[in-house]
Image (cartoon, rainbow, N blue to C red; front, top):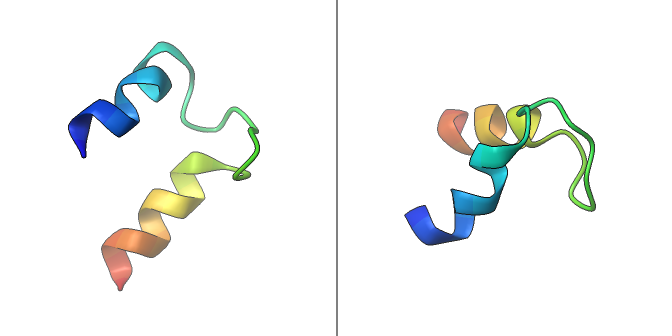
Length: 32
């Protein structure tokens, strides 16, 4: 799992991407 996030470590968490705001995604995932 860490490897799948490695690319995002190079970018701000609030940088929009194909999944949308990754910070929001992580907050949602952590809350579930």
